[in-house]
Image (tube, rainbow, N blue to C red):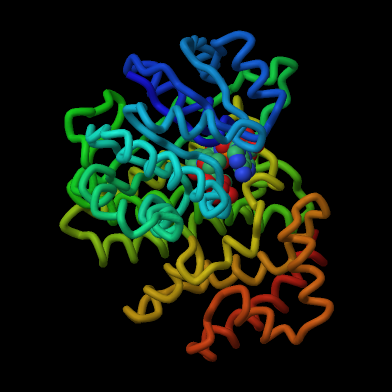
Length: 389
Ligand SMILES: NC(=O)C1=CN([C@@H]2O[C@H](COP(=O)(O)OP(=O)(O)OC[C@H]3O[C@@H](n4cnc5c(N)ncnc54)[C@H](O)[C@@H]3O)[C@@H](O)[C@H]2O)C=CC1
Ligand SMILES: O=P(O)(O)OC[C@H]1O[C@](O)(CO)[C@@H](O)[C@@H]1O
């Protein structure tokens, strides 16, 4: 069995690679990072370390394809592969879509009718469906019925904290022990491939919302609250009682939303247990995670369907409290990270444009002036944090 995996970065090598290899797959990693691709081809293997308890995992039977230099090799690999996965970043899906479309076209035209699933493992709701839309923009009408028939795009949720790596070996990756990968079974075309270490859900929505509005909303809250107080790592920030209290308040708000929406799937107790586990993962002393990574791409994280604005909208609709989430949103507009292009853009927008316009543009809240006003207040209130620091 072989898989084509787009994005040989931290989660690609540190989680998806581990799981695929453990299921007997050989992996063609696709990336534009020449160092990583060259090393994968030279060695055909790499190591993962579970930061605690310090266990090593060896991954072999892997190679690399540079899609910028050798796109034809990617097309060739997709023609015969058994699975396609991505962990490349939500914004990059549209960039790799034309190549996936070409690979799938040649696959069905070559007569390969073996069902294939294309699974986007990104921190976003509806990731594979989004990739599907992007791929279909590049398909000719005559192949679409065949692709509809044989190619699935099941949504997925992946959870493991993999910080930016600072190792001498560019392939080595140190990860937390915890991992969770859930795939929407109802959208799969090849139900013969069920990976061990992966959960299959009849409907992914409750699970992806639970993950995004807990791990990602919570982690980002630690990042933005901590940054505003002058911290640069998650570990240092969460030791501050103010930051810990803030993330607990935020999680209690998202928990109330998750419970109201998904009380058939989750009990209040199970959500509380889930959130306590997440807090202990953020506090893991064996993982050193930069606030710059967790808070990266703030404009994306302010999006209408993202980890803050979506729960705020849905809590408001239900008349439930979202004050702590709102406080975090105010702090996102203070996230000044010169190495992060979106942060630089956001800081520039705040200099050049009216605050209200920036908020509407970044959050998409054009039909909710009330929420926009609340964000304006929260932005100004966040100035006081800086003075406290
Ligand atoms: N790191 C983590 O803890 C987790 C990350 N994720 C998600 O996984 C995705 C990847 O995140 P990370 O692995 O942390 O990022 P990363 O930056 O370590 O990996 C992304 C990889 O994609 C490659 N890439 C970028 N543009 C490309 C292009 N046009 N063509 C081919 N390759 C390209 C980069 O060279 C890099 O190797 C994101 O969507 C993130 O939300 C999900 C769960 C956990
Ligand atoms: O900015 P992104 O892509 O959501 O990635 C950061 C997130 O990845 C994780 O490490 C795992 O989901 C989170 O802890 C963090 O919120």
